[in-house]
Length: 337
Length: 290
Image (cartoon, rainbow over all chains, first blue to last red; front, side, top):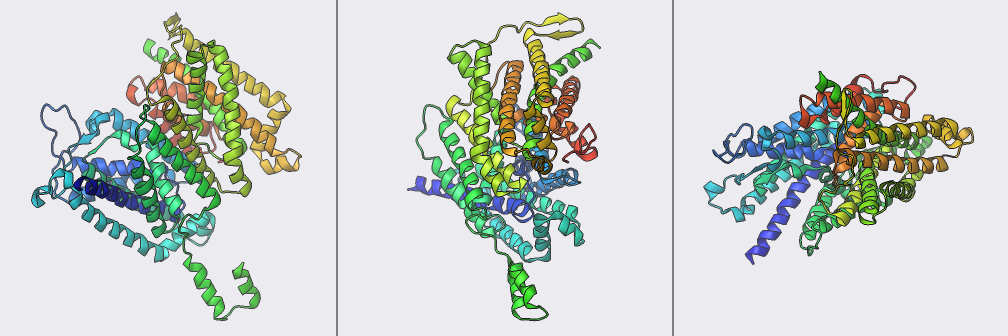
């Protein structure tokens, strides 16, 4: 009984983390149209920073080496993770958004991700090289006297609160003039510029914001799992978050959370219970092909995703033409088109 | 000093690999007008096919490579026809096409992992003893890589300048609409480009695998960013630019690699960023795509 509960709770925790990540990526890709193909690198930055700011110095003779080695109390490591991820997101944006076409930008982010992986993997003094960091304790587990195998009792409430906060933030952005400016950048950067929007700053801010959310997701991951190493942030991980956003409905928070439930909760967690074959890579390979194929099919047959984006501005226009105020029939006909 | 000159020698080998792969990628990017993130996995698949024909079917290396080239040309054309073409016909924006190629990359990589597992393989070719060639110290295999690359570049040059299809490729790459109103149908040109891309990706991949003396399913993906650096340095859609870019990136990475060997390929990323910030049209200044 308890084993089943623990498995379900772990699945729920992963879904919560993925929902947070999907909302962050949705701000960048779904709302603003910024293709950040190394989103997961910022999750990794968050995970590593949350680890090294709570682990303390590596035990003598363990052979582990990593920076900082602080023991900061909860929730400071999560805040530090968010700040670090946001900082590097801003740094990438500063170089990449200067004057790049969207496909050059995508190439730059992909390349930056490969290089980040190389640096973390090859520099043992940074985050302990390829072995990564491990033994990260669940926050408050000492005070609340919760054994490690039941750490979901602590992590699920923390994750749920953060998910609610992130959702609320994204919702407020959706309704704000800032959110409408971001959508304008997505629809046409030139048109947004023509209306006096500083598209560089709009994109920079949304890049930082999305990466801050990625950092929070990374911090939750390392505090829940207890370990993080470079093999956990290869390019495929970013694609999995993309798949949640694309399947769920880019630009719609409810949609992308639903996408996270579908991809993480059903496809990934479900595939853990498939029997293993002689070739250990077979089950994850089939799972990844299914995800890749689903994304391609959804992009073709239902590009708006499961829950399409709601467009408040169309409603506004309809309302205005409906009132008949200062609009001729020919104008309202144009709006209908 | 001799270390420095030797590093330039290794740089020429890396440049040869990058030129093969870079020309394939830049031709396709130019003609189809979208970047292809599955290119690294196409290289890897070409390597595994060559390896199957060579090490498992026991064919000679040249025959195995030729067979793999034909297979990869067909696989690339099929991928473009079945997966990419519907999106292009519908007029999907480049952003969506990019994500589709990302999906193709995941599928190809998964197929490789499912069939051959995650371990490393090697071709076990003779000719790994270094030869003393004046200031350079290169193995016969590395010389073969340079020779193959130079020969392939020459063939690509003849193809683009002497054949009707090559001229049409250049026309479509320069300006598809202008080519269309001049009576060039883009569809056969795009198919031929994908076939050529498959051939060059496989040649580049096999050269990379032979130079590194072993390979695993991550071979092409880990190298892709250096190839993109070459393509953007040379200017998208410009094969001669890519050849020059390969020479620059190859030599620069190997020479700087003398001081920071474990990060030598990452130098390519620095090159990429500098080019994108200061000269996004590439080394050769002309009306490009950037």
